[in-house]
Amino acid sequence: MGKTEIAIALAGALGAEIVSADSMQVYSGLPIVTNQPSGEQLARVPHHLVGVIDPREEFSVARYAELAHAAIDDAAARGRRVVVVGGSGLYLRAALGGLSFAGPPSAALRSRLEALAVADPDGLRERLRRRDPVVFAALDAANPRRVVRALEALEAGGGRAPALARDELWSSAGVRWPAQIFCLEVDRARLRERVDERVDDMVRRGLVAEIAAAPRPLSRTVAQAIGVREILAVTAGELGLEEAVARMKARTRGYVRRQLTWMRKLNADIIPTFARPPESVASEIARRLS
Image (tube, rainbow, N blue to C red; front, top):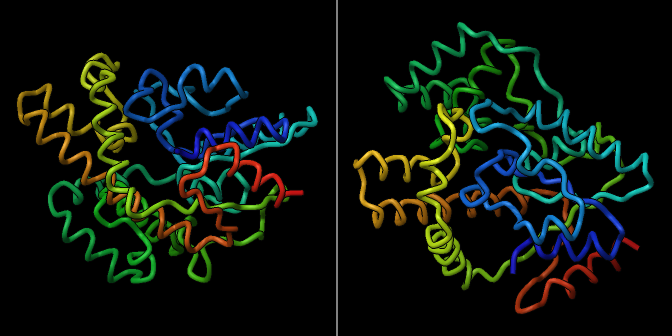
């Protein structure tokens, strides 16, 4: 059972609309690799920020915040409640308004940092660790794009990446709407199996063909999606499909572990989901909201 079905059941019970807080589901033409809700699921409840950005376009959390705020404001103006579904803790905070964003980045600084990320990724990570050990510890340092963005924020203005608060991951300061956060407690014993099943299902549904048919050049943001790099290597003849699938599963498990760490730090109500149908979980959340 996934959060999508729970969110749809909850939105139906509340008469609400869903706003995705997923950094990759915003892209159009890539429903398999970004794990978007199915057409049938999208038809059951109004969804926002799913499949709306061209995959050749770069996308940022600041841009996401603009779109999410507009979608939530519009729903609220129509008297509708909103269920924000993530995704990522960072995008959740951006949707609710609890982040501030720096001004436009320096193209020259970004270019230098990106060149270093290619030439000396270990050196770039060490540069960030020396500059701000707290930011480094909170960051997914294996992701060069995030290391570049963190250093960019630190070096451009002497501050730090706004997504990486030192004191607490979540604060109500600056939020635009009253909100209650729920974290779904998963069955850890089944989690690895579910990850493997999901990746295998993506391949069966046509993942390779989807990536091959995607418009070029893909944005650097899209290139970070789990499965894109691996399948591009398959289509280029650099990697066998079996090895690509194994790498996707390993990356997905790592991503899930990081997301669980994020969620544990949020001031969230924990909802157990073990062996429960989506309607049962949604009903419990609705009761807590009332």
